[in-house]
Picture (cartoon, rainbow, N blue to C red):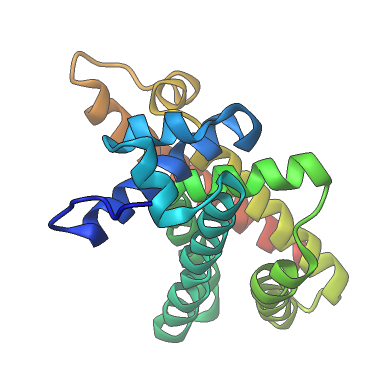
Length: 214
């Protein structure tokens, strides 16, 4: 196959990958064609095949990129904990940070959730590399902070994680509706206020869980 004429192949590859990530997340791999991905990227079908081969190859590349992006969260949370003024502030600061991270990576997390809903689990290798280290660090931190046993601490951290993800994946319009934000300003401005309201709510829940655990 002839090489597509493109002065900026890296930019083209990124557009294809971005299109595939969005479509796989929103529709699932089964309902997404390579032609759909090409249209979303504004390139020819031949270009998509040239850079990424089959749909299975492209899907695996999207998954690999997704896990690479999500792995950055651990470093962000560790930096927050290390710089917090006290352990409670450290615990509470993790909530809005995680929420903001998931909102920035909504398509990656949406794709991850599709995988979990379809199989009931993460890939074992990915689970061991991505989920368990963060979960165990958070559980040990909470257990040391409150004195509760590690199992109870782990379930508390996981419950907060599920809430954060669910809120973060909610559309801006629905978020405005469920948080009761009203006004004549733009939807973007109301969404920003809804996000702030959710962050405050999640921190309140975390604090309540923390006090109950003590």
